[in-house]
Image (cartoon, rainbow, N blue to C red; front, side):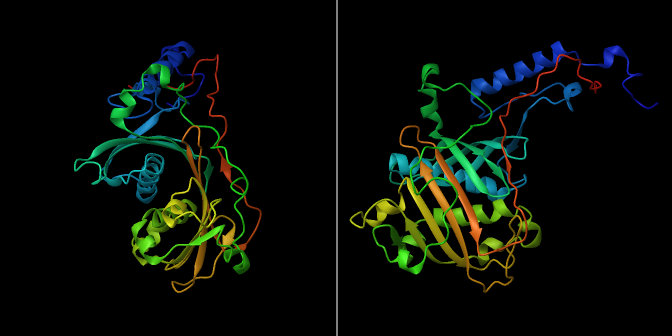
Length: 340
């Protein structure tokens, strides 16, 4: 028998009151954990298919989609912590993560990292990433902390929990608005604004490769279906850092500047993909990417915004940006049949 609104028995419906109760109970548990390390929390099977917003949990065993993206988010969170704290924690492994099921998602990552200069043992970290746009690198990292530190904050020190972080860190010119065009040779000769990263620094700062992979993968999440080994083919030719610091600052300080544009020239990407753009094909082609990093002085939130350069624009470009995230309320009965 075909199920329709007319022939579904009344007892098969989920009332608005029950829907609200299950939703509120679920998000109460999520709020208590701030979105991290959710254990044995779910909604009843008969509520599956309703417009209730839930998160999905994955273990860090690699059996999940967007592995390169998730790994990059972990490393970006650790970089935020390292810049602020003056440490050098490196990713050891991902334990698990929770993610909201949207076109632009929020990731709550639990991972292990180690800094040999601090301790020989690994530490458990919590990292929160909130995407701002679909189809390009654009996110905010509002949490990057050692898990033990979160326990000592106390309820009074915590902000009210919301599933999505709205907005980004405050910044000043030139680190606001759209990303800048690629600088001219004349501009690059200005040593007070631009610093050419040398080869030894490039090898010692693996976050630069992380930025490049995040730009490529954010633009093209199907790249692994065409080339599972694309990362091993990437070759960074040179990197220029634009900061507000003058040339009296040592290179180490400019590399970890809280506000910076990172200009990356590379090759080894056979066929770049980006919304409404076409690129010359070939591993030999030199390509360019720009990434902006901004870390807020007051909150510590870090944003990354990036793009591939050099493509031919093929039409009007649209990005899906995150809305308010507010869940629509309904006074009517949820028209979802129980699935027992």
